[in-house]
Length: 248
Picture (tube, rainbow, N blue to C red):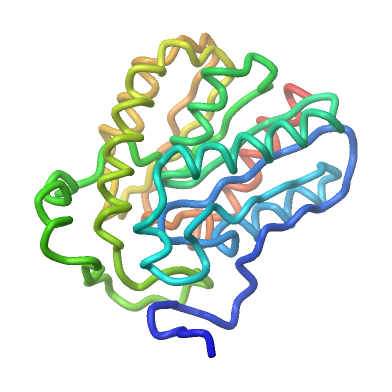
């Protein structure tokens, strides 16, 4: 029997999904400890606007925190990259979006593939408050409680942080920081005024360091970290759709 004690909203669908649409594609990448439930409302919105949408469930997610502790950041990257390459085979243009860690994977793909037509990032986790402690903590504990206030957002994922996965996130952050100048595609970045995990400097640093000529930082004052499911999501979705349509 599957152990759901570590899973918040276990009843939700968090599996990989593909929504067939028109010739313009969008690949959506969820964050660390999350599942595709985090990006499904955005995916369904974009599909309703005529786009083809793909969202992979990243390795180690949607199962048990111990599985995530066994993954390396490259496992997550390769899964996201595969979804992009598959979309590129069937679409005239491909845009990539991600939330939190998913935004970092999107940036890394864009830095390596000029065929990415544009990027939209929500709460990009280039900096995370109090994350450095994971380097030491990994030798003493497997999981760390999130200590997050309960909310009613339809978010499916682990209710703990697998500590070794946090170390891998730190390593991914380091790689992405070095690659930012190689990102030259149009870029739309959202940061939340009520985000308790990712500080505003994370989005500001990305805007400052990328090589993109077209780039915009949008502040959503009422949005928490999981902004794609929160109260300002409709505004975010509309801005993303306009961003894609203007370049498609």
